[in-house]
Image (cartoon, rainbow, N blue to C red; front, side):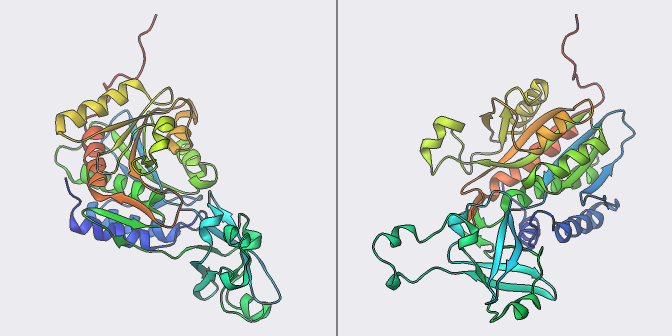
Length: 362
């Protein structure tokens, strides 16, 4: 299964936009316009910044399909007298990976380029060379080329956000590297599945509420507020999942997950057993590859948020395999993305008001 070229181009456009936690609006606008052009439906953005679009079939039940749109990044916290900019992490940044990286900050008058420099090896002794990358952003200033605090503050302000400036790179076959696939690729897949359901004559037996949520990386914020607002009976979350085909020792901790082997279906106490079995059966019927990942407790995805808000929803987790999560060079296989779109569209499309959610009663 392959992603259509137009879909790949749209995904490339989406991940080219910086959408660090708290600054997701450009991504939401792009997704909203894309949905409106494809379906004629009118998406809305709520007070928190979450994008919503509803496919109302007049059913009793609503299914919320969700993927968060924010990526990890930085926020400007200080500018010193020499014009150096000091950053704090937005989300789970692996600080040593920032050394010698390019950064782009959303400045006062547009993007501001910077670098997080590294000390020349000529000036370090043998022991210092072992610790070139620091583990605290306070020791890794961002150089935007300014020569004074005044000049720097004419370009950036305290509170401006930024991201590592690494873009879309095609690799062998259907694999691609980029920063921030976590989780623009997940919300992209849910967006495309929603469009497919909205434009299909087969439709769906439930109302479908698509949400691109904000600020997942700092506490599932958008997922919680959206789930409370929507109050779905069923929630389907699409995020990225850890691929363990490179770091093989991690298989003993989180299982054997590989790029190109299909969507990852979450199994465990967080996920509704009937929904899990439903999506597994759909994958089998449609000839889609499928991997399973056991989660023994609540996870850091918005499936957990949907599970707990109000009276809670029956939830399923469908993830896209990802290498090098929370690094500037995340890698996905576009074939996995295509399979996720197909699985969600066919799986949610097959749900209706009669789908059993309650366990056997006494």
